[in-house]
Length: 79
Image (cartoon, rainbow, N blue to C red; front, side):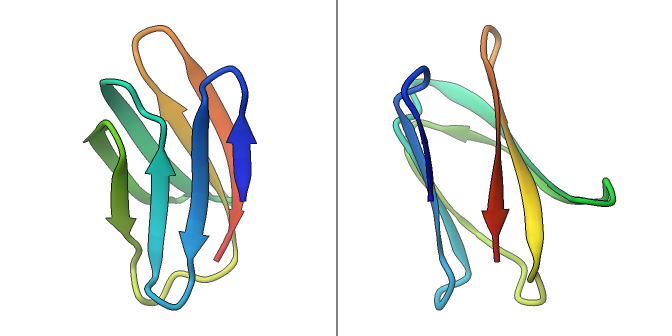
């Protein structure tokens, strides 16, 4: 679980459902998830709060990037 005061966003996983929950998005945001080796797990544009279904075989440590026109935030997630 990670939160950012700058973005007022919450990012957390629901491992049983294999979901990534992103809350506090205001407008459009590009969400990209990378392995520590740099491979892209997924990249998706979301609007406002959204839940993203994770690949069934995804497990390990990943870097999650949230970007819009003026802001950029990276956090670590464990699946």
